[in-house]
Length: 544
Image (cartoon, rainbow, N blue to C red):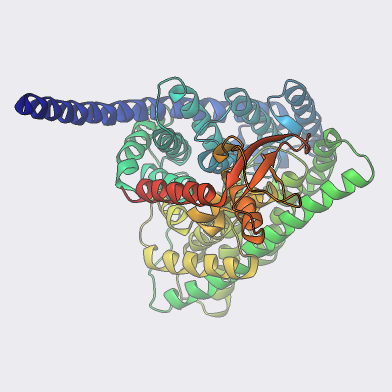
């Protein structure tokens, strides 16, 4: 009898191991599927931007600077204004249909929020609506990047594909990272950077269990992108000459300058966004008026200096080719920062990675040109420092120096700047964190009540709600009449703080709308047990 029981238990264990292996294979299969689907979604997104750009400027997004320069002042000015009107119309429809509540576009911060709060789920309607808003915005000349919306679109595809497959929350989060990695890989032809971006920015960990599927998705997306778009770097680099020993400490100095520029970008964007929102509420201005108002301002800047229009990769190529003077480069740094801040504060769609690359290229080229002017032949050419500036500014803005450094490598196809770029990116990121305290994405999330910079324990305290862990009100609970009341929607952190202040063993839970009606009970022991359990699960996910 005992032998039969032992054999049965052994068989169950073997079966469980086999099913677990099958589950791993299932995750890998869907990771590759997400990589392929995400790549095609990104290709379609880029074609949509080009279609709008052809109408607005008579050329694709890659030729927007020269296309806008060939137009008259009024024609170039009108493009983002009309684009703003179109964005307002799309936001109005999406808001009424409850696809984009509040008329707010979505990008990378929403993917991070979905990973941390929503169990890896993103609405397909919201994702597609946000992609349309971004395509119209960027094609009409709004100063932003296409990579942020592409990451959101890739994550949306991943969420849709795995929604009905019975995956665990951990697996859904991993597949969400697969969608993000696929988007970065297809956008930049950068499969290595896609993997690290998903791990560093989206998931916030480097667990071995998620590395394989994310790598598979990134490689699959790169293959699809190379089949349809070709296999070549985004920028054709001129020769930057021999690198001198002095160039590494000079790159460190450029890193400090880039950190200051990135901090200025974050401060300008944050204050302008908050200021626009407060003034709109104060004077009763509908959010639907913000895109065309922003279009007027962006149009005025772009009609004078078309380098601020759109994603800006053509302007980067021009800067690398030495077509701009030092004075113009400095002006373009200021104008690109201002145009991007206006774009993001006025509800155009788009991301911040490409503006970071463009601003960094201008700043680095100006720095290198100044060195070449005052110390001819003593240092590398301005191209060298322009590439370093690209990685340093964008890495500092995103708070992701590792993945952005690799993206800069894969965009240029040049690995000779490795040491200098890593030094500059690290210093710029450190400077930005010291001055601003958070990256662009964490600032966006903090506006929504989530501070993810505190690590896993802080996320748990903010995202678990009282209603998730409360129990039925026990009969004869020893409560005083003056006992506090917990609201069902309060966070676990708020509940623990109230329980700590109270002398009670537990507190009744009420609904915010009906504070006189008790709907549950949360004890100090139960709250702490829920917190400890979540910490253990988080630790296992981050280290296995």
